[in-house]
Image (cartoon, rainbow, N blue to C red):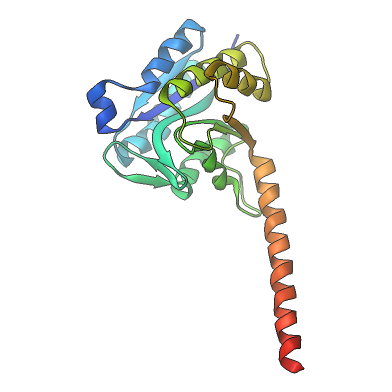
Length: 218
């Protein structure tokens, strides 16, 4: 039996709604066929985003009695995600939503970013000596096709429900979608990369400062 449920949070554009194009709804049907429990949250602004990560998430955890995988289906760019009403949620703001949940899950939160440039969300883990907002993040580094995301994430969850590891589930995702750019980032790896980068940066700053000081004394 699956030990997870998928907490879908979707905020389509007004054009998406006009055309009846909602990736989250399509995903729900696929999850149902795979026997995977899920909850759906159609949000349009920050108050409904608050509710999706607050009361509704608590109720969903109580109802399903298993841990959530957060699936975010929104339009996005390298800096964050856009809501239906045009409000922009940058990565720093989204990090504030994810931190309490990841802490409550002892660092085990998986976030699926079904958004253009969704893998850029790994920026949320680029903090030194601070808690991580997720254990793992799955997303795309570019403008993923709507159909590829729908098919890919369906395969991803189906393989997870069969006991596949995260890397193997992402391999299945790439094969099903025909797009091998979908990627997996672990929060600890991202944070360690950032710590190393900052350490090297500080050394370079000291070296540059010393070089300038020596040049001025000669």
